[in-house]
Every structure is written in C-alpha cells, then in structure tokens.
Image (cartoon, rainbow, N blue to C red; front, side, top):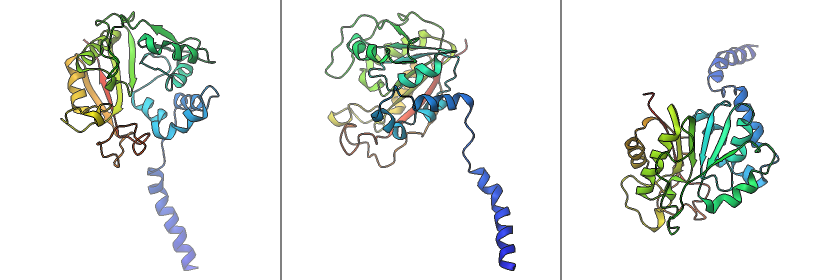
Length: 258
C-alpha cells in the first residue's frame, strides 16, 4: 500500500517536469509544411533525406510564412522547391532564380502538381567559369523584384567566388523589401582556414557573416539545427564518410527597415 502511494505521488510530481520537455505544438502552417513533405511529387529518395535536411525546422527558423514573397536561389533539382511551392501557392508566391545551365532540370520540376504558380526570375548574363562553380553574376538590382520578404539559399553559397558572392549579396539586398530576410545554409569550414581541395565546398561562417554585413545586412541569428559534432571539417562533403552528415551553418540576416 505504501509503495503504491509512493509511486502515485512520484508520478504526479514528475508530470509537470515532463511537460516542460514536450515538443511545442505545430502551427497550422507548420502542419502544411509537413503535408508538403509527404506529397507524392517528392521521390522516396528526397523524403529519405528529410531527417538530415530537416526542412520543417529549417524553414521555421528562417521565418517562412504562407503569405510571403520568397526567392529561392539556384534550386537546381528542386529539393526545397517541391516543399516551398505548394505551401506558398495559395497566399504567397515563390520565385526561383538561377543560371541557365540548371533551367532544364528545374523546368521539369515545375510541371509537377502544386508548382504551377512558381515564377522564374532572369538570372542575367551568363559568362562564368564552371571549374569551381558559378563564378560571375548579374549586376546588383537586375532581378525584376524589389519587394521580396525572404531570400533563401541552400548549400549554394560555396559555389561562388568571393567576388561573385559580393555581387550576389548586393543583388539579394536589392531584391528584398526593407525589413526582408536573407537565409543562408551551407557546409561549415574551419575558421580562417585557407581553401584547398578538400574544403572547396565549405565556407567559414564567420567570413560569410562579414560578407553579408558588407552588403548592408544586419545579422539576426544563427541556429544549430544542422550542427554535426562528428564532422571533422577536414574532408570533401561528398566523401562517403561525410555525405549527408556534414556540419552546416544556418544563418539569418535582415535588410534594415530604413
């Protein structure tokens, strides 16, 4: 009898503590993102990467809302496009912008259900080298939009040279409305480490923050959503031992109100 009473008292005492560790209830829009993640337009391979890429947590951190004007930079095969397009279709709008070399793959993606309202912006003149990714960009302000709420780039920032990144950030700044946000997710490089063969697709997050601030942005926040402690930051992100398990930084910036 005493044991039963003790267990009952213990259960009631730990219940409030357990409640503190319960995951917060999802908003209606977050549930909509979850529905998009389960959509038939996504392949089994794409869905299998959800645990690694964490689209719900990532888009929530970036502050995505259903009535936003959003620009996705260089969507290529459209992994995030297949989620962003459907959730923004009714009340918002998704724009994509990328060099012509990726246009064919993305055009096929945009034929899928729920992506019929996605709009494309002209990247501008293409004359860049491909040895180390996209090397040149259109001059700032060439995209036909200046009132976007949010610009996102997923594992693409490393594809640009330092000079091209400066132009990219200026172009993003011009495309956003005052108070608009800029979200960057990419593979992590050691701080101040020179570029070499193995880290070419990694970026120093401190250097990224400085580059984006130089374009006029204010640094808002970072997230450890994609922190991976067992990535030694030493090897190419495509290596078998690293692929799908790289440490990635997740940064959010804001264009000043004035």
